[in-house]
Length: 481
Image (cartoon, rainbow, N blue to C red; front, side, top):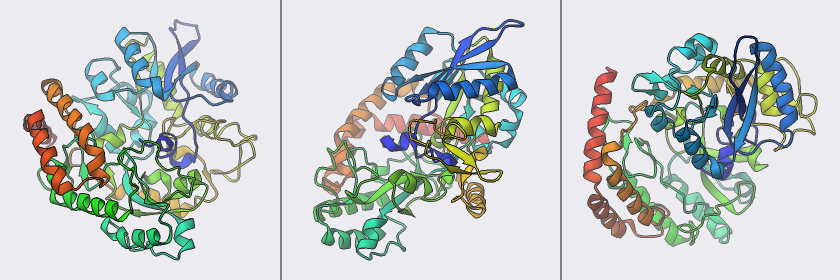
């Protein structure tokens, strides 16, 4: 995920910039205060103590518990949470790490009955995709944050540069559609990246991915029977790769794209077009424009789709070692149903960072600063967040309509059991590390590179993995009916 997207892409209605905090633990007995330990990914806000003093007063009033929130930075998150889980350390709540695998290992509490009982309002109001996509072997282990339930890939344009040269982006709905305007821009400003991509770029299409987008296994979302294919052998995908190579040769893609790990700052004028991910809580280009500090306009590249990876984007879990499972679910329920609590965390201190203008609208004050609040995408239910006055009732209605109309992936809820194919998947990942960046960025001719890639993937065990994953998928589809 792009750095800024960790904090913004899934921010939803919050328009917030930073990540959520975490929470603390103390086993309870009758008459004793309950302190819940909760781990969260990211860096804590500069005013963390004040935010939590206010929040804990509310949580104590409503549930009798308090939270000991503890942050773990993005760089340390995987290693530290793996150690905490493997050691059986006693904690209560955490932002989910490696959700599927750890659920299968029994690390997380089964919430199948606990959530409907102790968080009924949240459970009843969740989009069904959240439940389907987080159910593992018939059981629910996640307490999902209701935010961007679907995602859509977009081609996003720097409107300062679009307007500067009087360019037309209105008819763009594919990579190919963008070639004319990219060429026109490149002729005007050859030293600015026409298509600002780097090493992590992956070509998009109307696929879902049973493993990850970085792996050569995909399912076409418009076909009847879900079939595992190698997208690098799919003709539509190959045509787009040829287009990328053409753009690279014309200078529309930076010459260092395959090795560039820095990317192009969203708020800079070093790029003309980029690819971004959006969801319903982004209210069109509102989040992107706020993050950039200038107008961004996007054109749709893929269809909006509810996928397993999307609905697992921001899950909380309760530890199986917790002595306070019911209370943990109760506190998570409060975070997702109490506007006073959630808005105070996501926007900062009321009266200093923001103030209400009406029942559900707010305006920001001078105290609203990036490191003085938490984020929305991994804090709580975005639908109970107040919105800026710029978010109209019509925009909210359009948001809800888009959620209703967006399709579920044909493999929503499907998770691959990798035990029998671990070696092959490791070998395949090594192959992709050698080829992926140069092929996706157009640096090499796909007609020359793809046969080599596909041959090396076969040698690495692609056929065995495809057969195993297809067998599991067929069983999943059969059991769904």
